[in-house]
Image (cartoon, rainbow, N blue to C red; front, side, top):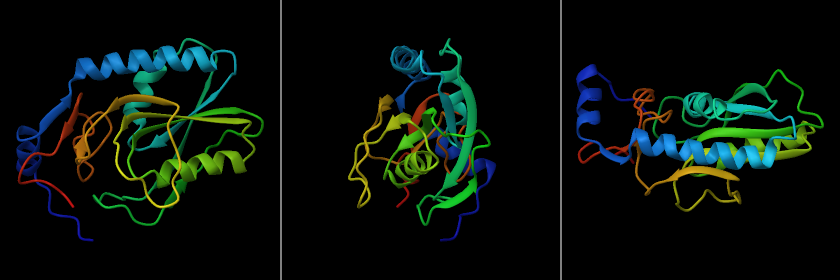
Length: 192
C-alpha cells in the first residue's frame, strides 16, 4: 500500500472537516472513570503498566496521573499499520525491559479495532509468565473483530461508531495524534 503525500494543508483540511465524536472534556471524564475502575481492581497488585507504542503514549500518560498506587511503567511496540491506514502482518519492534514473570500486567492501548495486536500482546505477556493480564483501551470501536479474536477490554474509555478515527493518540498517517478529543475523518477523506 502506498502512503499518500501528506502536506500541512492536507492535515489542516482533515482536521477542519472532521466530526468530533468525543470532546477533550469527555475524554478527560472517561479517563477519570477509568482511573477509578483501575484503582479499584489493581491498587494492591503492584502492576506493570505496559504502554503500547506509539498510539497509547498519550492515553497512558494521562491515565498514570490518575493512578495513585505503586506501579511500574514499561512499553511494548508492536504494530500492524506502520504509518498506513490498513493493518498488515504484526511487526514486533520493542519488547518490555521489565520482567513480566509472576507480575500483574495492565496493557494500555489507544484503540480496540480488529483486535489482533492487543490479543497478540496479551498472549505475549502470558507467555512471558505474567500472573494476570488486564487490558485498557481509550477507544473501543465496536465492529466485527478479526477472525480468531475473542477479546473484551477490562477497562474502556469511550466507545465510538465504526469510522476512521484520530486524536488523543490515534493517528491519520502518523499525524493528528496530538488532537485533544476523538475525531472521525469527514466526508471526502474517508479511508478504506
